[in-house]
Image (cartoon, rainbow, N blue to C red):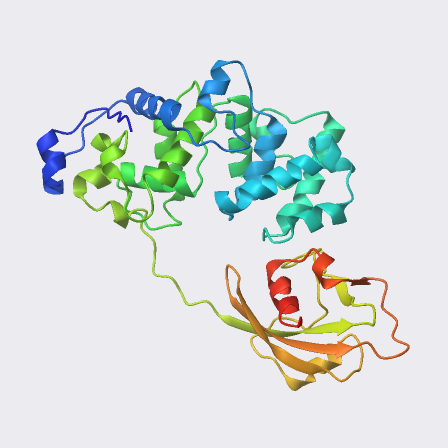
Length: 372
């Protein structure tokens, strides 16, 4: 790998690994930006939604629809998970107009398994709004007027799709900047300072490439654990590296234990091999997604949960499943029964074969333990 350091360290320092001998060197914002962009030109990740530096030199430009879709998908979801799902979305709806014309249920179903399901509802609303206005706006301010687009997504789309100077700060960039300037304010209180320091080094030109360079640096070099500082293009001006305590940044408060919640779900089957599913309420966790009928998720689960079953039947407990959400751990008791004669589903329920139901992960887990 070709290395590009603003002020390369003496070879004896690298060989000895003597961090106490390292001192960060002052560098102008322009030189920091140039170092990162030069590194990105050689080492940019190949991602299905990205127009890399070589393609850009040949005149190709990013598709705002692809940039927006990828950024929404990547919120709280890994690149490895998003890659195949992004390609499926793009194959099914190759343009924002195609997504706008699709039924919401189709978009929700295709989103199943990606989590944070409010994103899918807002994705569809935003596609409709963009189609109605004739395309994506190209500034942060206008982008933030669209459904589901907040500060981060607006900055990312403005910078990457339109090359506007917009300071983009995701988790990877937070880590790079916190280490670069040894910002010791604990998170999340450090966020304004991190964005301000990122603004200090953000270039006026190639803003989108710089954002993606910072993301790639955080993902592959300035990693949360065991950062690869010796091949970092800006390690010679990194305060945390000079101090030898890179992994201490960003500073995070001690994690509080997640509270436990409990609930029950009811898997009712008919003679055609179908299972009863219902659409969850629009607001709340897993909003608008298909799921098994069940109880509320509370801190305690009482025997009267059967009063909330879809029908009075011989319910048999087949086990439990657990699922970790952002703020709590959920345990669901899973019950099965056969639909009694004369049962009629309600208007918000539907019979679907389990293998064909597009379900969020926790519901997939529940259904899986009902199968032989």
